Amino acid sequence: MPQHIEYDEDRIRQFILEKQANEIELAWDLRDVFNTNEILVGPLRQLVSFAVDELDDLRKGPFEGHQIVTAAWKKEVKGPKNKALIKYGNLTKLANNAPYLSAEECSDVIRYYGEVVEMGGEKYKAQQKARRYTPAPDTLKPYADLDTEKGSFRRGGDPVWKAGRQRTRRPPTTPATAPYDATYDFTYKLEGGISTATVLEKSTVLKIDRVFGLMVAADISGTTTDSIFFVNRYANMFRRYFNQYPLLAGALDDPIYQLLALATLVAGGHHSVLESGLSLTLNRHITSIDYRIGLYTSLIPLRSAHPARGDVLSKLSLAEKNVRNRLMLVYYREPNRIGGCYLFAKDGSERHRFEQLARGDTPLLHSFLRFGSWPTQDQVLSLFERQR
Image 1 (cartoon, one colour):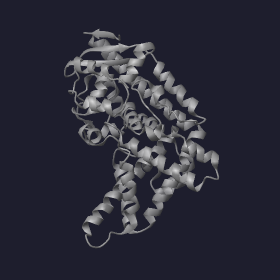
Image 2 (cartoon, rainbow, N blue to C red; image 1 turned 90 degrees about the horizontal axis):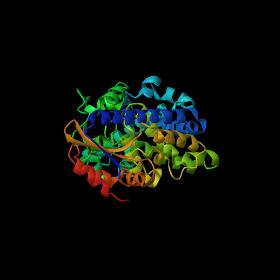
Image 3 (cartoon, rainbow, N blue to C red; image 1 turned 180 degrees about the vertical axis):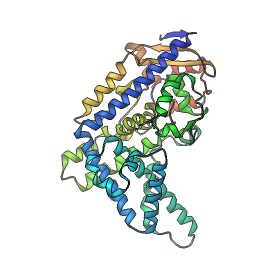
Image 4 (cartoon, rainbow, N blue to C red; image 1 turned 90 degrees about the vertical axis):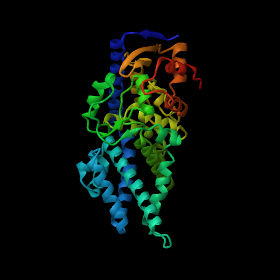
């Protein structure tokens, strides 16, 4: 049975802060692995260069394409600030610098591409609606199809992405998350997506954060699902057209690239490990990732055979074994007041039990959707019944 700690709010708050700091450092380590391993970042730059070329062709084509590419650029630069777009200024300079992009810059381009796809899809649907009897121009139809495909990666439907995803796109004035203030203040200053979003009290992910002692950020990550869509699309395209380069084509097929979003979004102050990990696990049919909260080695894609797999796994293992990473479930007696926590061992039967209840899947999200904003002891104890 896990250790039960009661009436020791300061000690548990310290556990929470240490766990959050450990997760931030893990993201930095993963980002550095992507940036310093040419066998990882090289193929990634190739994927991004294809996307930049595609967007430049769209920009140079009919007016509707130019309009969407320009509008998406302006939106990304305005905020949360897309640092790669600000740095390079236009698509031509992005294309010229594609061989030298960092991992986070590649991730920024993927965010921009996702915005173009979404805006292009919405524009095409509006054109169709406005032209009841005359077909809309076909310029943006491929992007309407891509937008539908991209949306299919938001698995779990409305309970996850509407009922459970509760946030506003405005900066918080004072975070209502007392145990998490120190790490929140730090990530807020990175001026990423966290600084432009407020997670609301009804958020499913916020409740999970409070129980597992995690960092509050910007709710379940749609940007991660956009990245899954992007890597899947361009890796498949590369395999079809460039299969005469089997080493490169094989590398791009490896699901290890699905970890790019987690590494760069968390390190850049856009999302938390949980928020990205949930999206990766909901799409495990593609990512082969089955994340168990706090058990970071479960983030390694099961089907990965990439040469850099060992470097990534090493960072995940170090974070998991770190003394600051406690496998715990926290409950509350009233808003902002910690009631106690259950502390699990990292090996043996307790670890196994924690693995079963900490799987970042739709059943976990559905369980927390029914909980109150500050989960009680009885609600936390109900998680012990999860068997997967």
